Image (cartoon, rainbow, N blue to C red; front, side, top):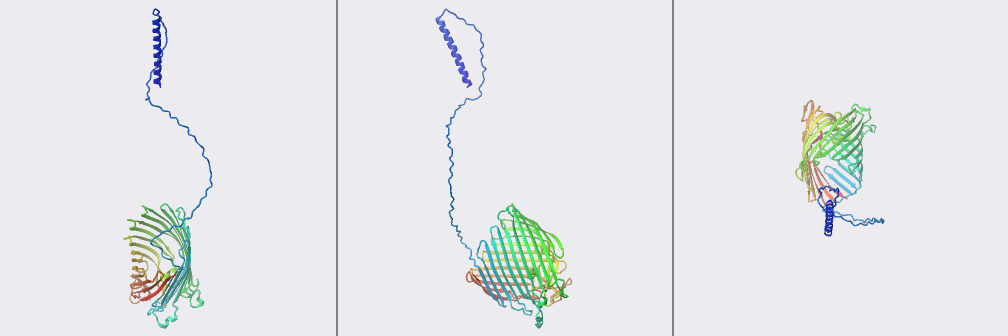
Length: 582
């Protein structure tokens, strides 16, 4: 723009100069003889020049048309949501769930007058409720040659039920068991046996209940609480005046667990309270020099905080915790036991090495002892078993999709470990009392299992033990080598064959008097019980899905091995029967 103004100014000045010259020339031609001389003074300013730095550009002016805006009309229409019913989808699979029958019955009898009966009835498949009842019976009226009568009977019955909800489960049950038998562990001597009461009967009533939450949201705290009551008693004496002179036991346990998951860590705490009240006869009184009444109250309170974490894509797992226990027995003592475990998965769970250390305290009850050795005397003095530590390590895994294995080594230290020894106050018939000792035990264990769908299942377990005791030469009635194998084969879904094999060697027993084959070591009379070899065979024929027949061969090798001193087992037994589902 500045350049254009300069050019216009220059053009106007030039045209003015031409006009003056033309006018002057015209005058010269019209008046040749007149000469006009004009003399004057003036100041003519010339503006300084400057260079325009910008380059010329085309400036175009855009003229936009005005946009006419119209306001939106606010209209509200009433709408209705109609939900159309959709038929539930059906998932078709080639494999369907087998039909579930409410009832099951089993009836049979053995070659040595051994009747067996069982009946069960329960609810069908239900998402929210589960209930049922059962009754089982097994007895024997047979005799063992050269020994006192060995009849026994065992009957169990119970009710159970559960309420299954989305956020919790509530379950409970009522159970009853009676077990009658004879102390037959002494040679039959004719009429002498008639004057001795060798019969015994255990009765047990149990009430169980449990509440467990299972909230899926990890931000919530889940917990489970179980409250159980158990009453156990032995047979009352034949004389009515001695009604109170028997053993009675009341056991109450409260087991609770709380767990919370945060990220990859799982925090949990177990809080357990166990009470056992044992009474024999009338406390602070006696009916003989060797039969005195007493009461034992035993309470254990334990708290076990625990943390589990996983990392390296959940291949590495670490568990760390403590087991704090308060033992309120004859004396009140407080214990702290370790608890830790490490696992690592190799090659997608093909091999899993693991190692850990644990410890704890175990409450002993007459009810538990009678399930291990029913020939124990009712006048037992119970102690709690303490395990300061138990270290274990091993490796488990799978060889193929059908075969898995596990091998481990364990070293444990146990205080007040109980052993069964002959009761010096009951030489005839043979009964067992308890002896306590400190024990260090090492165990090497290996197991392998093989399975082809439901057609073939087999597993085998081998264990080797090494014992070291403080006061005794051997761990009485405990094996040094143990081998167990089980197998099941399904042929054409019609015939099912079963086999069980148990082998134990290295068992020793402590005697009161010397016997044939006994020896003395560390001023103790010791005898080897010999090898325990027991093999059982069975076959079941399924006529259809509801009716089947079975045949069982027990102690096929007919070995009358000794499980306890002077207590040989029955020889070969043949049992058969039928089962039905309804």
